[in-house]
Length: 81
Image (tube, rainbow, N blue to C red; front, side):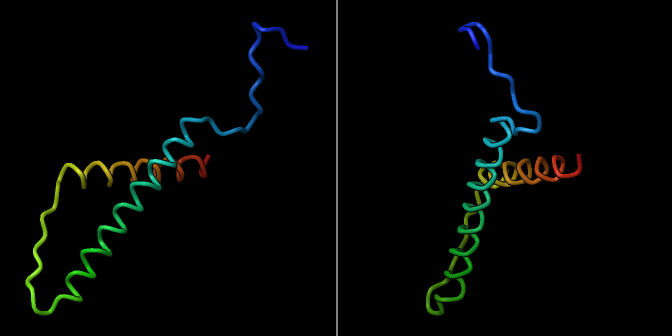
């Protein structure tokens, strides 16, 4: 029986919440990157009469790419342990 002062014991092998948070942010970032690429590719392929220009935000690319890389790297690291 637990009293109010004791913390419940973590199950061995359970995934910490911060890992799930990194995974969720990585999935969000990968989705944003993929949709951006698809949207730009669609603009290039479907607009024959209008010139298409791009304006790439380097901070956004670093942010979304970094989150995707962090989630992928964490996933690989945890699989190899």
